Image (cartoon, rainbow, N blue to C red; front, side, top):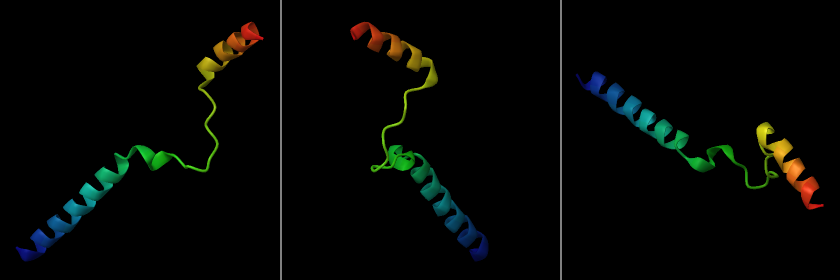
Length: 54
């Protein structure tokens, strides 16, 4: 009984830790990296708008 409880407790705590880590918004961003390029579908529109303004 104690062995099953210990396994359940430790694995449950690891699951909670992983769940909380994956839910962080800053997990996939580096502060030192340059900003990402806009998605491909918006690049053409941004070029047309920039050409219109110039």
